[in-house]
Amino acid sequence: MSSRRPLSFDPIAEAVENWRNAGWDAAAPGMALVTSVMRTHQILLAGVDATLAPLGLTFARFEVLMLLDFSRSGRLPMGKIGQRLQVHPASVTNAIDRLERDGLVARRPHPTDGRTTLAAITKDGRRLARRAARALNSGVFDDVGIDGAQVDQVVAALAQLRHNAGDFE
Image (cartoon, rainbow, N blue to C red; front, top):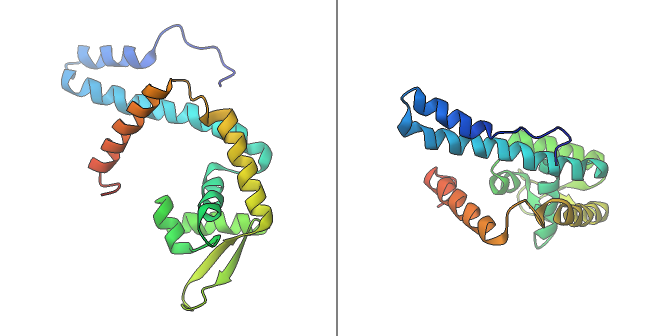
């Protein structure tokens, strides 16, 4: 995914050795995990960004479009979008503002709650969401660089970590 030359060594393995040499043996595996996840995030995000940029989307805006696309009615309260995506309300507002400016989402009044605003995906938004999903499927999700069994193991381990951190019940 990267255009730069790969290193001739694993810098995280070297960091583990440095941690152990400093007397931090017990913390070395955790440091390696956190650092590996952070670096992997950078690698995967670069692939996602490169795939979505030509479509004029960020991953955050893509997530909003897909959430709306998959909803039964194609619309959700702004607060529910934030809850489902686990982001701050200001982030939802920012994403909806941009999507609305691009004609991909429209704000609608809630039919029974005057205090609530719904975000509704437009036909153009639905078309772009599906196009972006196909692009991500073929460009990133179908081959993340490890085989299917490993993917399942990593996802399960990260789900356990997220659960233990209170991300979900």
